[in-house]
Image (tube, rainbow over all chains, first blue to last red; front, side, top):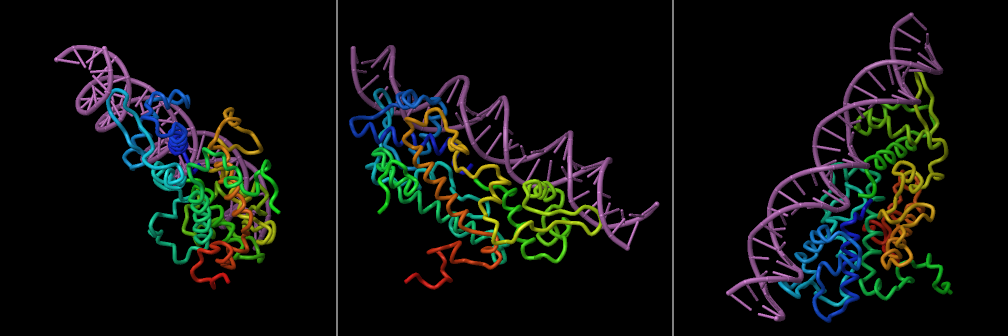
Length: 151
Length: 151
DNA sequence: CATATTCCTACCGAGGGAGTAGGATTTATC
DNA sequence: GATAAATCCTACTCCCTCGGTAGGAATATG
């Protein structure tokens, strides 16, 4: 499994906040309740999003969280990357060009590198806005049965 | 991590056997040695490949393993699927249409489904032969720096 | 029969995922 | 200024899987 609950819940939170829009801060308990998730666990996940600059937060009474930018300005890739640390499908693909010592002679490395790129490319191409507007065509592409067939 | 050492080593074994061709059975110890991997661990991985019909095996002296088909007739997808069980990037994507109970209202499901399809599609498009011939263009696509640029 | 090999079952340690617990700090409102 | 409602912070626990080990039974060759 490449994406754990941490990343999945993080995305869920972002979607929830995106839907709530800009009318005030939304509290952690509200999010936990509306998504039916453990408040304590969600707290640790939101902390990552917050420290990563994805959210604005306000402490104290009537406090809570809201998106720092507009939904269209978040790619799914950056949200998952922040919470998961890496999205590489295998251990031998490191971030930022660091590579395993067998890399020079490894015949399967191009495969893993290609897979990594395909994943990254897909996730960079989709934004929070695509999710809240239900842009199935963009997410499912040719596999979308409810979209009109490609001509 | 979506693909563990199990799947990676399995692929390595398949590549090794593909390179050795059809001149006789190759023993486990030969494979372990040439790939510098633990023989005992490799044994458990080869067992999966063997039971899954990927290999022919011969017990006893001068025994060993060889590919059951030609390299071009193995997709990477089926090799990894056999050893890993699933290649779904998230837990909420099950195999064979089984789905989580929130599926009907889940706004992020199309994203995960799309990602799953992108991965599957990529891995189905590459064969063992592509790896042993070093078909970088197919594996890396537009990210291949040593391939001639697309027109 | 000796040897080289596959085959089978059982076991184990470490690490990470998933979640819990408790309290310190900050802020809005009465 | 007290109180309530919220974020923030640190630590802990349970449990499962990954990665690997161990030992021996079955089988084929010479």
